[in-house]
Length: 66
Image (tube, rainbow, N blue to C red; front, side):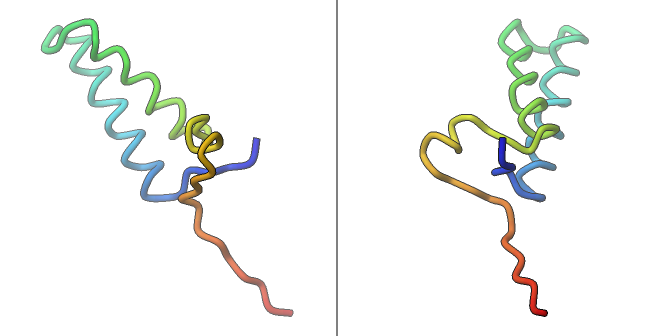
């Protein structure tokens, strides 16, 4: 798996996932909030299957000059 989720995208996914899971666990949201596991896992792994399928990549590309 080559990383395809970049810095800001990862942070947003992790925060959103934790927020949704927190809402689900405290009872402020319904069962659907457990779907927060998806953005949390993709953020932690840095890889998103739908991005891989459609060819998106939010990772910054760095050029190294010798």
